[in-house]
Every structure is written in C-alpha cells, then in structure tokens.
Length: 116
Length: 386
View 1 (cartoon, rainbow over the protein chains, first blue to last red):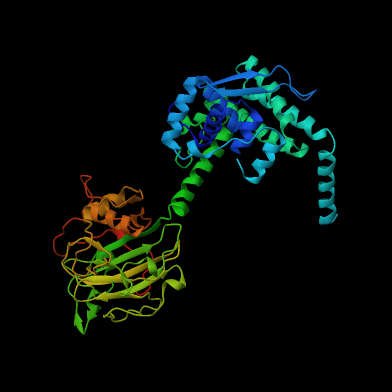
View 2 (cartoon, rainbow over the protein chains, first blue to last red):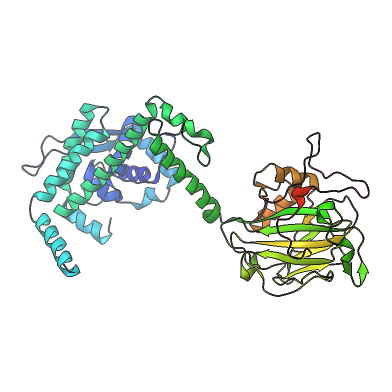
C-alpha cells in the first residue's frame, strides 16, 4: 500500500486490536473507537477491502428485534501481518496502547470515562 | 422578533426533532442517497452500503446525533457530486466562444482551464486565480518591493535644456558639463516599507545611488506622493542661482565628494514615490547609474562595494516593459536575505532614444557640443526653469 493516512492508521489500529482480541466490529463501533467521521472510516474500509486486508460478513439477524442487520469487519491473516508491519513502522507505541471498549452500554460507559 | 424568540424557536424545533421519529427518518434518507452517490459505479455495492448505513444510523444513539452523522455523509456525497460535475465539464468539447475571450491576467493557458464550455465561469475562475496570485504574492509570501526609474539623464547644455547651465555653481564656482538626472523611487508592492526594513538602521541613509565619474552637487525632490515620505527638510550642497530651493525635500542628501546620492531610510507607503532632481557635473557620456547600491550590514556602500548593475542591463530590463526581479546575483542574494525585492518597473516617463541598429541599450558617446538628448528626454514639468 503506497500511502496510509492518519485516518486510515486509526482504523487499522482499531481493527488490529480487534483481530488480536478475536472480535469483529461493525461500522459504528469503528467510528466510535477511532473518533473519525463516517466517510473517512468507510473510505479506509473500502481501501483495505480492495487491498485484501479486510474481510466482512453480514450478521444473520440483529439481536434487537426490528433493527436492520449489521456488517462486521475483521482483518484477514495477510491484512493482520501487513497492518502489524505498518503500525510497527508508523505507530509503534499503538501496538501496546489501545484496548477496545467492551461491547454494549458498559463499553460505552468505559469509553466515555476514557478507560479503554 | 427578538433574539430570544428565535432561540426559543430553534430549541423547540430541536426538542421536537429529538423526541419524534422525524430526525432518524431524515438521517436514513440522507444515508441512503449518500450511499448511492458514493458507490454510483456499482449498484450492488451501493445497495449493500445503503443497508449497512441504515444499520449504522440505527446503532447511533440520539436522534439529533443520527442527523449529525448523516450530515457528514451527505456533505461528503455533495462534494463528490461537485467533483463529478467538474470532470464532466472537462470532457466536453472546447467551446469556440472561449477562444475569443479577452485575455485576463495570466491567461496564457486559458485554453487549458477546466471550464471549457462555460466562458463566464472561465473568466470568473481566471479572475479568482489572478486575485489569489496577488494575495499570495503580497500577503501570504509577505514580499516587499522597492523600485526605481531613471526618468531622465541628460547634460544641462543639451539643446532642449539650455536653461542657463552657466548659472549653476557649487561653493561659488561654476560647474563644467553639468548634467541632470530625474530619479524616481517608488514602492510598487502591496506592503508598506517602513524604516525597520532598511538594513543599516543606525545610518539614516537607506538607499544609495552612485554616479561613477560624476559628483553630486545638488538634489531636490520635485514630486512627493505622500507627505509622510518627507520627514525633514534638507537640501544639497549647491543652490543654483535662480533655482528655488527644495520646498518638499525628503531626507535625501547628496555627497559632493563621492558622487553618491543617499536616500533616507524613510517609510515608503504603497503606491508612493519620490522624484529627485539631481544636478551633477561630470564626464560627458557617462551613463547613469552604473551602480545602484544599498547599505549592507557591514555598512559598505559608499565605497561602491554594493551590487553592481551595468547600465546595459538596467536599460535592457527597463526597455523590455516588464517588471522583472534583478538578474544580478548580488542583488538577488540581497533580496532573499532581506525579504525586500528591488525591481525595475516599466517606466512611463521619458525613455532614451533608440540608436540606429537596434541595440539601443547604451547611450551613445557624443562629440563635444553635440546635443545628447532628444525631446523625449525633456521632463514634463521643470518648475525652476526660466
């Protein structure tokens, strides 16, 4: 990948940590974790998907009745390797720093408190 | 309607939007349309994204915040639409109307402009571009400019100027072959030049013009565009008989011994100028000036160690009718070091005659008694001429 912008690095960092914790994230969670605007996040997701770093899958049914299905993203093995290399080069401190917020209201509360 | 009433209305509207389903509906509509704009090239992907972004809006807490999130997607989509419209305009064939548009500032590449099929937009774009260049040059790059013109350089004994050369004297002695020079110093830039811009602030002399082979014996300021250019009254060491003394003199001094004219480090507001008459006896045929110098940090200027501008180059630049930066290396270095640019704007005053043969950059050497200047050298106004 030729050039990774700051917003894309943020997205990559979040996805990498999710990959290490073996969780999948949907769009709003990525936006919330990175603090970036939606178009920025989805531009990064499109780019990583085209590069083969990212895989996505739709959930069968939203746990909340009446809500639309969500799409979850996760790094492919190749993408995880590349993302680690990029992060090691550009943000080595981020490999040790970020922890994802726990899902649900508790996670949101911890995120608001700055505890990640 | 008072401000309080307006604010109450806005707040009430926000509360209604928050506690009704209106905001999420609008947000979902914006997201759906945005998805189709973002992924217009692939309908399948656009449909997937539309569904995904509907779920994203649902996951976003707060009705007004949903609207805010959708706003960012919507503005991004609008920007994308604008970019595509520009690309479509580029692909259209070139309109012949554009080819007959009058030239604008910097219109050398007018046929390459993006607004090919819209002359009105092209003209607007060029004017905006030209304005941007001026703004960048004048304000962002913070350039300052100080220019000068030699509007006249002639012997006092020349036929059109025989106004009593024998009347000129210095220290009670007559002058041999006196010459007159009309020099114009001006600020053609966009920023005012202040006293702090001059290098040698301890010395009151800001700019020096030297006359090799000649001796400056008198100076008077004949035109002063701004009163604040003149901060004191001084006159040169000579007062020709019958010549009125300089009534509007800038802080300008003439050094009789060195052939150097020193102009003070006075503020020069934009679009202002001095015009100096300079009476100097000297060797006939010597061009003016062969040396234009400014004080350096070492204070070396009077001895001629400043930048040297040969007369041929001065004339060549001046006659080309362009405002060019100096090509002389020393002047360019000085410009770069001091954020001050010396340029030679095209003169609207007198010009030396073009000798036959077309070279015309160096005044001809003339025999004794031969008229050196033609009528174009004559100044428009000479208030002290009899």
